[in-house]
Amino acid sequence: MNDDLFERILVPIASPDDAEATARALRPHLDADTTLIVAHVTQGTAAETAIKTGRDQFTGATYEKFVDILYRDDLQFEWTTLEGREVAEALIDAVDIVEATLVAFTPRDMDTWERTIAGDPGGKLIREADVPVMVFPNQQA
Image (tube, rainbow, N blue to C red; front, side):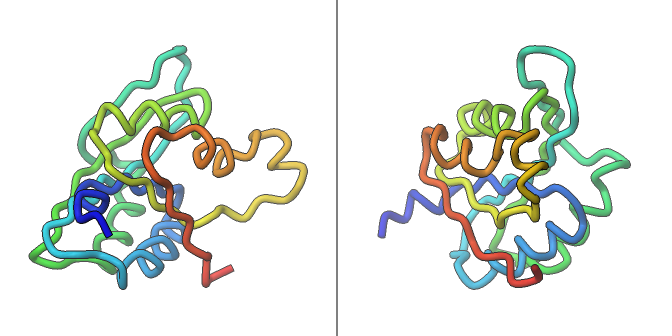
């Protein structure tokens, strides 16, 4: 497998529960010197995706849950809060901006109605991202 693929992984997380599920799914697959770009998407109003580097109060607990499970001295963490009208679009835009080599996530629990309204963000991300996307089963669901 190409080592560069796992160099900079964009990991979208939506909540503390989602952060825990994603971290547990991702943990056995991480190599030393991997950079995890942990991203949370908030509702934005502009047509363009905005990126704020660092943790804010809203996402702090979500980020803490993620790093508590995955912390190792040989991993690097970057924290990114994205603002965008659509989750998938914000993540697709962020791939280039943060120079991600891979996107990895666990699917969110959505019923058919929510998926219709949200436009199936996971499916759109898989179809339109310019890098490979790995989807891990959500073992907590």
